Image 1 (spheres, helix red, strand yellow):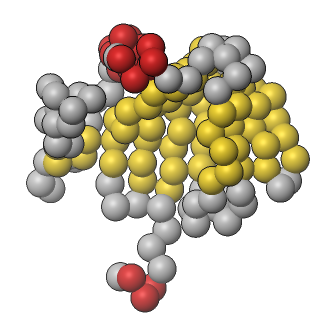
Image 2: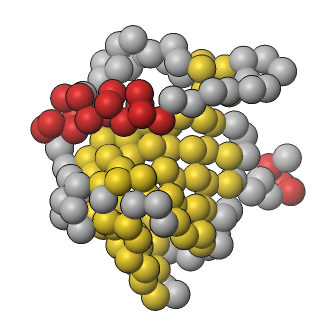
Length: 136
């Protein structure tokens, strides 16, 4: 398998971090410190970084300030949300869940959902991506 790296951006000029390989180690604490130290987090209500990305899966680490929200999203694949710090609320057409540190939830695709932080929070969002036969 060929290793894949992200490209440097204006927000993350260091860039070039490994995001896909046969084996990828992910230091969550290091990434939490990084996204909380970035200007994007200081100036905005949230910041996030993709720590793993393949054609069929994404793992995103997000830090939200209290009252920040990610409005309605829909994916065609299953998602999981694992709270590492704080307290968030997930709203969907199926109801809502309050999640605190060390709790998680899973949601099937094709359901619109939003995530709101009830206090400063950090969570992992994992998204499975289903490719339709016509795109294979």
